[in-house]
Length: 249
Image (tube, rainbow, N blue to C red):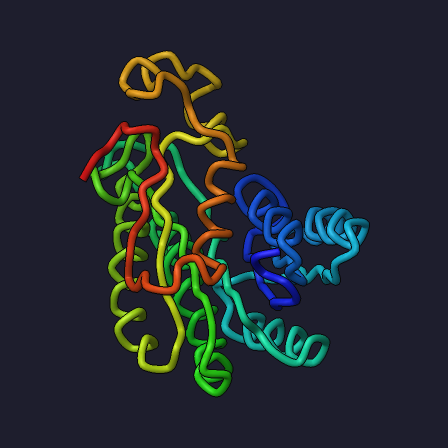
């Protein structure tokens, strides 16, 4: 049990990568607060975790709204008394590939959720983790943030590049307090989001991936558990690629 009795928050935990990470943490003994804009999805995942014997709560919230972030952190503290792990997974994507086609409103929405949400949630738990002299913050980047986007818009790629840079800044600031901040940069992973982007046709991607297949959410979740556990005790500000060799840097 690598995360026994650790109190964790997973944003966007109601589906896809977030659900897989929430379940993986619970299997390692963590108590999980599932945050999602869709309350029904959050409830479903929290119920599955409770059936496993771990504590879990579901909070319907929007990571881009500071009042909702602060309220949600307060609820977790009230219920569990501490916060050990934060997984900033919540994110949205648009398939527009041309910068000329991106409307300002859409640009602002993508950055509000994907980047501002990471900032707000991280800031909300910093004081708590500092006082504990312990914490793990795991941010979700993307291979698209390194190469400029693969079938995703420049706004999505820019938001993820910024998240990965923010990870390093936060890691430097939090390391003296015993708080580890790292990020994961998934490649092509089979989720509803990537299925929407590709139309379910993985052929071109598979041809370019050295391992010869796309990834599954559990493979990303295992890396999240590693970063949330003591196994990653000497990692600080690292961006871990999970892409089957599609990008090697």
